[in-house]
Amino acid sequence: MVRNKSRFFLGLSATLIIGFLFIVNYKGSGIKLSPSLKTSSMEHMLLTHKQDNKVKWELYARKAIFPPGNKMVFLKSLGLKVKQSPEIYLTSQKGVYEVEKGNITLNNTVELNIRDTKLATNSLEWNSKNELITTEDDVKFSGKNFLIEGAGLIAKTKQQQIRIVNNVKAIFYR
Image 1 (cartoon, rainbow, N blue to C red):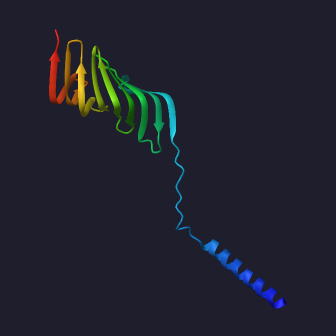
Image 2: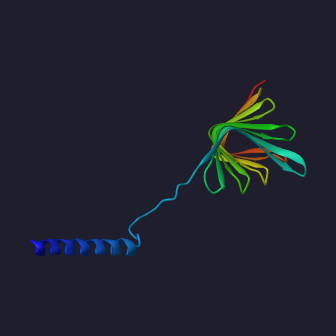
Image 3: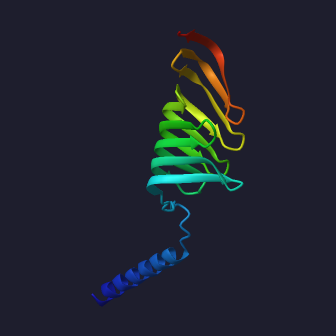
């Protein structure tokens, strides 16, 4: 009986020592740890871009989501106002602001308004550096006396030039 007890304690001790050595020497190579990345958001964001002490454009979003990395901001219900004469106002349900480049991509039913004219498309991009508005999607440009449809658009805001690139159809009213 004493012999069985000593064998039991010897076996238990050996098992505990082996378990302890295993835990101490375990490197965790089979475990994958994912860092907890936090996303921030903001309601009613207003971003003003100035150049030479003059406001060049303003970006408003009902909601802005800032993922880790500070490279992009995801926007919901946004408006972009390009401050020039005449003023250009763009609206969309969704968009992305590229922080480093200063570019803004608008998606999901985009509307561009200049004075009494309106342009509608599915998506477009505002290139802040070159002051250029572009899209490859179908566009519909309408005013009091005209309707122009086509595909693709290049608008040079500084020069106040708008060009519909392909399949242009125009109707002018009296």
